[in-house]
Image 1 (cartoon, rainbow, N blue to C red):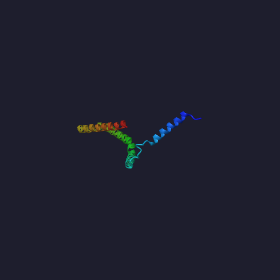
Image 2 (image 1 turned 90 degrees about the vertical axis):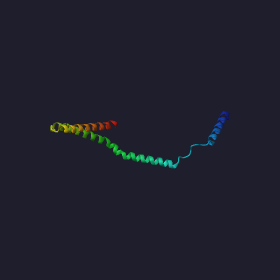
Image 3 (image 1 turned 60 degrees about the vertical axis):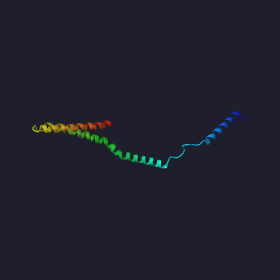
Image 4 (image 1 turned 45 degrees about the vertical axis):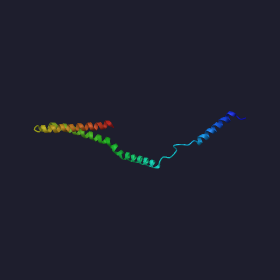
Amino acid sequence: MSNPLRERDDEDVQTWMRQLAAAPIEGSRLPDPTHLWWKAELLRRWDQQRRAAEPIERAEPLQVAIGLVGAVVLLAWLWHVAPTLPASSSTIVGVVLVGGLMVVAMTLVAFGSLFVRD
């Protein structure tokens, strides 16, 4: 016993499949090999640059810490030396001391901002 509805569905599916097979496929071309080569070369170079910069990026926190420690040590040394300076050269020493303290303060701010940024 055959089912007329099922046969009709089979015919419809076959017709649709033939139409699909006959339809042109657009955009199925392979990309230009030169374009692929340039892209691969660019990705390779970016990877090399990233690998070359890794040691520098790992050392940055250490450099910042060394800078901060050095600035604090210089600040402590200037604070300790200031009272023992002779009174006759107080103007020159004061200018040097204030200048040194300003340099230390700017260094602390600069290195601190690097630490906060990371």
